[in-house]
Image 1 (cartoon, rainbow, N blue to C red):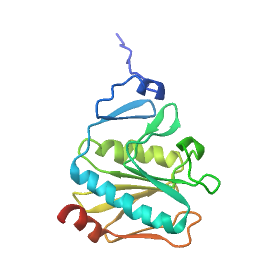
Image 2: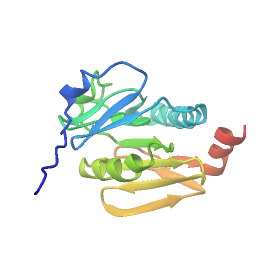
Image 3: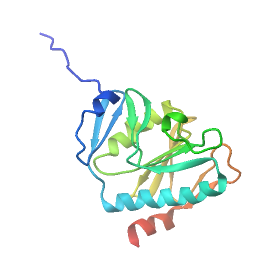
Image 4: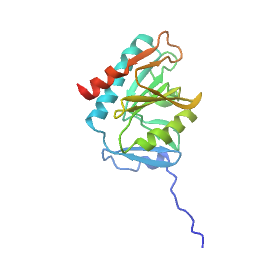
Amino acid sequence: MHMPTLRRRWTIDDLRDLPDDGNRYEVIDGELFVTPAPALKHQRAAFLIARLLDDYLAREQIGEVFVAPADVTFSSTRVVQPDVFVIPLANGRRAERFEDVGKLLLAVEVLSPSTARADRVSKRVMFRDEGVSDYWVVDLDTRCIERSTPADSRVDVVVEQLEWLPGGAKSPFTMDLPSYFAQVLDG
């Protein structure tokens, strides 16, 4: 006898009913992802990238950097909180809400054991589908950044210098990865 598979399809409305318990709740294509509070080295890694991006964006004036927790809502079944993300300016001004611009210039996730599958598979596919121009997965264990773009289904593994030139920028953002990982992990 065939047994039907009962699988709940989560939406943004369902998230509002969840407890404020310190976990991060995200929905990707109707699937609920629950992530516990990150470790200190994870936060150090995210904060340093955000700080470097903030310095760059202060010069380039094309967008603004944010850190989790902050909802990025693409649809009723796609709500995520990237560790670090950049949204473009809205008509030359800072946006009040993500919905004012509706897109990301960059999304960054720092790997944790509990997030590796979501970060490397579900989110990579979703960000590519949503046209996010750059998606970086920071792997602290291997001291590399996995870079994805919607134009190429392959993942570029960067170990020396990461360069990012978003639309509208006059000069690229560059990050020396050995120095970055030394500050995060060895300092």
